[in-house]
Length: 74
Image 1: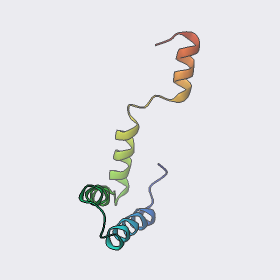
Image 2 (image 1 turned 120 degrees about the vertical axis):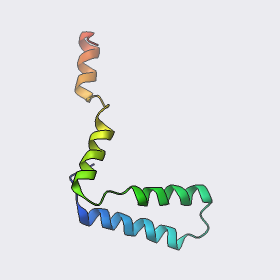
Image 3 (image 1 turned 180 degrees about the vertical axis):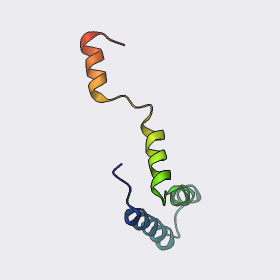
């Protein structure tokens, strides 16, 4: 995830809307998934940054993993 861009978020929303509009044959599960993705897009920087923190808060950095393996640190 990169820095917040309102323009990019609107482009993503338009792409998802286009996908839903142009593919009426999508099964209910796939259509529902894309509708949820559309509803879940962040359209302001604060909610975007909160989402990034939530997603990456439990992720270990790769260098931490290598260090702990190399030196037996947990």
